[in-house]
Length: 157
Ligand code: MG
Image (tube, rainbow, N blue to C red; front, side, top):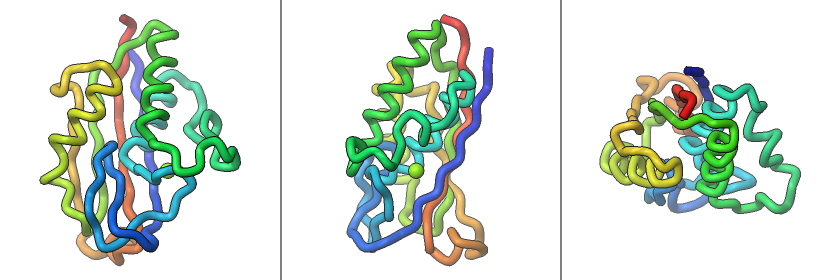
């Protein structure tokens, strides 16, 4: 078994929704990002890559590459899932925490779990989505941005 952790942040900017765990969530702001700025999927990819010591998301999908402009982050997850399979590993479980004051994550958590489980080819029970605020402290507390943490365990198939 191997463990991996990932962390991602995007600043809020103009817009009317954010992508979280592959789900479009209505919000009074969007995020500034080269891709779709999905912090949940970016943290998850980094955790999976970390578990296999394969570097980070920036190495595999560099923001300097025009190819990834506006990219659907689900394509990153599917690409990383393929790397996992290639190396003979499957996901045991993933535990993800979204950190923000808004938007509310709870009502969308089940849909996010379904998307992630489908892209990784695992049972929905293997995917946990949690949310917390920072009690109005720090950049998330000031509603300047949104963050996500992911921890994964992978095992040899
Ligand atoms: Mg990111």
